Image (cartoon, rainbow, N blue to C red; front, side):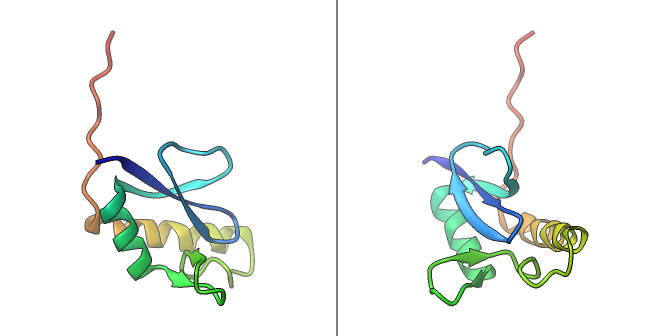
Length: 91
């Protein structure tokens, strides 16, 4: 099963991608099914009913508070996801 990253932008919008994307911060990584299930249950839902948001980021008064909220969410959700195995590097 494919592994995806959950990524967040400065406004707290969460997206999913098979690779890291410049300008977006990683929230977590796991199999697509498990990652989406955990994020969809724990993230805030925007008024449109489709957009997922990192709790605390949209209402953060400044960039430092937004980053603190993203880190808190990432640290809180990490135990719910499978640990990322480090792949052996070839020398």
